[in-house]
Image (cartoon, rainbow, N blue to C red; front, side):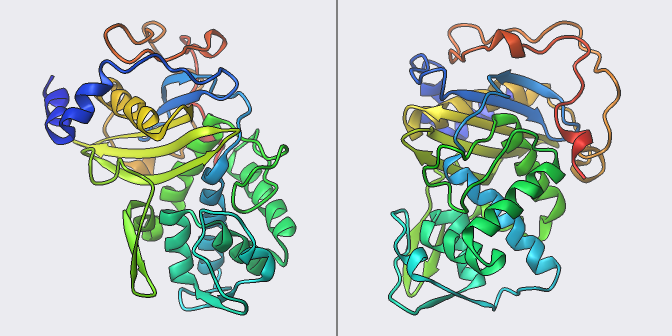
Length: 323
């Protein structure tokens, strides 16, 4: 009750609305969700979490993962200038917009990817790091396998429509947690609500940041085929969740679902060290007294994939697989 009061106080009317939101109208071939206790990898809720979905701009999380890795390896620095090719310039919005022959400093490129979700910048970074966007996409897919993302295939660096580019809510949770685990020094990029570029303030798309208590990242995404997607990290009172919602009808409804999940599942999260516990091999079984109940009225109606209902003996979803 105390947690509910805190969240309600912080989010005001928006949180009140989440307790009575309309049923999820997105088609089952779009909707998917998972709530993971980020301290130990235990799944607290899932619906269609392993069903194939289009990642949209959640793709840029992997583009940034490989960017941070290149920085760690000394192949690039924040001051490296990335050329913007004609192919990159031609990408549809969201984009920054460049003139022919222009470049962008890597630090600004990272901010543009994490905050603005700029497609022209994603392609430019992919071409620079991978030799071509196609080559970079192969590196992205290979890295996904290494991280334990078993059902993800990347075909481009931006998340723009491609019928062969697929992921799952589970895999996006793995990637979101891997970014914090492996690159904590760069995670602040995902917390930004805006950034300055060429004297202009450019606002981001993640309306949960700065509005919902404890939310500290990380990425939104949308294409028509995917609906409205989000990966959200939230920390409060020593408890940590990663929440993935895919296939929302609108950004507002998607955000309302995330807020409801925070209120509902944060009390079930364990405390502990994210760094020491999250990626350690899980025990063979997790002792749950009973399957978690479906959300009850008058709470948010969340579709339940009966084939994915958490049963006694389920091991934590992804943590032991991540290298």
